[in-house]
Image (cartoon, rainbow over all chains, first blue to last red; front, side, top):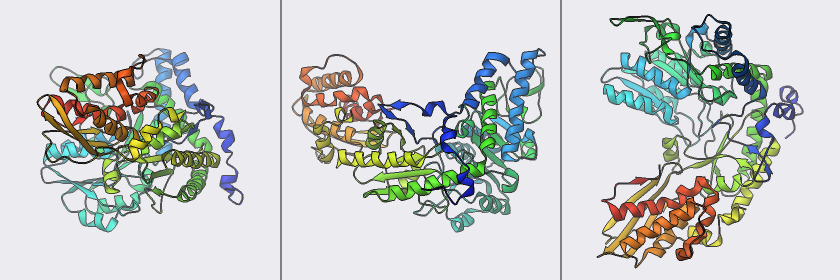
Length: 415
Length: 145
């Protein structure tokens, strides 16, 4: 597909970008690696790898406690990531950003602190039919503990949420609406601005799972008016084990702490402990310092390319891939929402995704097969699993061509 | 290449699985589930005395797990409980070790390619785990996790 005529995409040099990702330059089973599993984890550019290495080689110390030089350098580098995260999400202050292990911990933090304090028997939590298990199970656990009710926004056969049905679910007992911004299994981009507004009108709060959105879309938590927004560093080209939970300051201030330990306290006696201010109240123990610094480098790296450039390139790839896959006889795309980002999930008549994945792997093509931690989505579409090719800005149309050729090979073997 | 894994006999049994039906007069049943890929399997056994008289299965799964269940049912008929469990051990050894391939596995040797695909071992063993459950206890659903 030509990039001519699209000034944003034309300025984007994917081959130059690929030079930044050492992992992409390798052969798998004798074939060039075609990495189409970025929704599971994105690859890391030199900028991130070098930042983590530099921390361990030059600055390594614990943070927030030492008066010595290394500790001060480490503290400054780690805290600088909070400033970068503020810019990335456009929160009002950097103190509304809590470092967590990832999106899963972000959701769990809110369900177990805000949830335990504010949800009572008979209250209701609303999630959607396309949530990842990490935005289902924590709420289920809370509902079970509190005798509250979990309600689910249904979707249509394209994989789009039914907002008129959502409207009917909202009532004065609704405490929280927890919905994904972009579906990991389907690629659907949900109208979260509207979903949040509707939640607020009903007097409920809204938490948005941003794990699959932030690699692809500009996110502005103030414009969305999200109460909580959470993301994983490793999906935005940073390391695993680190992520961000955004929460509005007034909510965070009123929430009890998450885990107890060092760094989250002001004073401790055996009679009573007073807690630190946010965000530190929620950050007990020595954190993933190297991860935090690596994620900071990832924020910078993405900002350097520009989210508009990323979105434009990925939009072209997705359109190209959707058309190419649709032409394969017997292949059915799962998730055909009008607003989609970077996911091509599909099934092929008579061939199990696991077999597709193995045959593609032998051709150097990395895809994800299985239920994508979204079993209810699989149940809804009446498939046990799908094959998912997920895209990032370092992917090319030539790689889509390789995927298509790979699928033809799969069909040859199993026909 | 990939044909070492998907040998003709495996492709044949995955497309046309043998003994693939429920069994009304089964006296042992068990269910298996592989949460990784969503494969589900129900196994039916008719055991008389100590001997497996008949065996069948139903389920949905990948080519490897379907072919494995199909070939397992073929190899079990007429075996005693102990023989069946010993065969399971040998089959497991075939998939998970570099040990020399044993001649007494019969057709089951076609699964030797699986040892080069560690992610697929669970697919090939699901039916056998389920068998163990059916033969050794009341048959709580087993999972490969």
